[in-house]
Image (cartoon, rainbow over all chains, first blue to last red; front, top):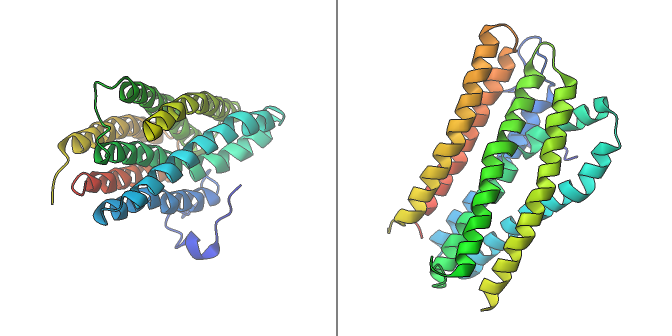
Length: 203
Length: 67
């Protein structure tokens, strides 16, 4: 699990002022996630402002690759690790994993898609009648629907449950497992997307 | 400075969808807080999460003016 360097932890804005059910590290991990999450859009802004095709390609590849790699790791490795743990241990992981990924993953996904569209436009490949562009669009729509419709609401529900005076630990573990398994499904969709990307890049 | 209208529209649609879902969950959390089921820190952290996502989408919207 990612640890937060003291220098990046910042002032305790989100630290509980009085007795709180939320662990003290939740705010720190959320701030860390935000600090990393703003980097991809900033990188895209720099690439576009500099009118650098090389930098735009770099931003697209690094965000898309990291997003896919994370989903593969979650689906193939973490799902097995979590399945082998007892519920209290799963809850402890969910308490740390959810705030850490809260901003990073949506930001990576949004920037990978946006930079991909800008890249296709700059290379004259963004033709909506192209079956390859259409295929990419369909996969992106499915990934987005899963992200907005399942991933994000589950993460927020975990936060809400954690902040309750009597958190339902079984519910937290269940929601987290659902997200981890969904990451595996997303990884499969992204592999399909990479097949399309490889075709677009070569032909 | 040129404006990429399709990109800006797409970003606005995605941002609206995401923030609407987060907003609905936030409203549910506020109701739970009023019933005394939820800690105030939970509401504060969700508000921060909502603003954080809005900030990321605002940065993305800037890119529509640069492409």
